[in-house]
Amino acid sequence: MKTTDEIFGLLASSFEAHRDNKDQDFDPDMPLAELIADENERRRVIDTSVKALQLNLPDDVAKKATLDSLASYIQSMQTS
View 1 (cartoon, rainbow, N blue to C red):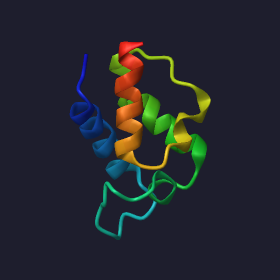
View 2: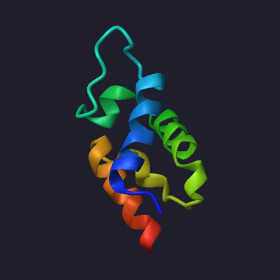
View 3: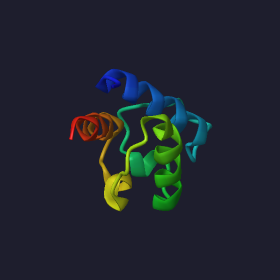
């Protein structure tokens, strides 16, 4: 089972690589919708990031506000 920090690292590296505006410095505290505007693309990046965890995440997971809240949510899904 991965820790929240490990999950955050996986997500942050994927969001940094796939973010919309690569001209600005990456800020992991930005809202997810500002990093990747398209919700379907956010979902794809999330699924790819945590594929190794083999979790079935709900469709609304791409609506989480920040990487931190998303990482905490995914970590809690591992234990349920």
